[in-house]
Image (tube, rainbow, N blue to C red; front, side):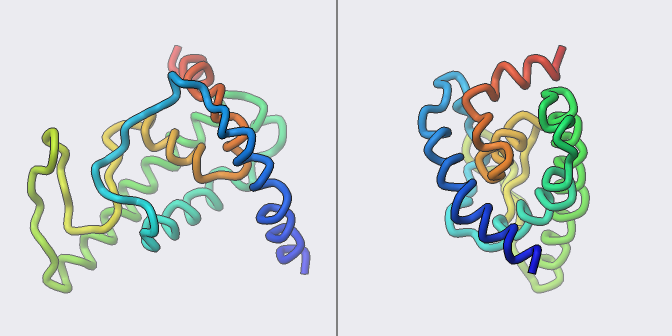
Length: 151
């Protein structure tokens, strides 16, 4: 029942507040992601939820107050997402006789998987900030936080 209460708390209280706060995001924080459509992409949502649960959700409060610690976790999450989740999805597609790799718009590599590949930690981190109810309220400070990590 505790997990149910937590889920209710996040979905009904924290998430709407976080979304309202993020609607005033900093204009410099706009980052282009992969050309793949992630809206209504169930595989992408599940992958981000998995990564969020493994790397962000259980961070201690003191680490959630430190930009370098958050981005260190996001870097670990990005590697996990790319090395395990995307690779497994591509392998599964290939075994089912999926599409081959091709060059997409602006030279981005399109893969057989329905999951976007993020070439760098920054766009992945931005996507996670948008996905996570814990990180979403900090979205307006994304650029400054990333710079603090990247020094």
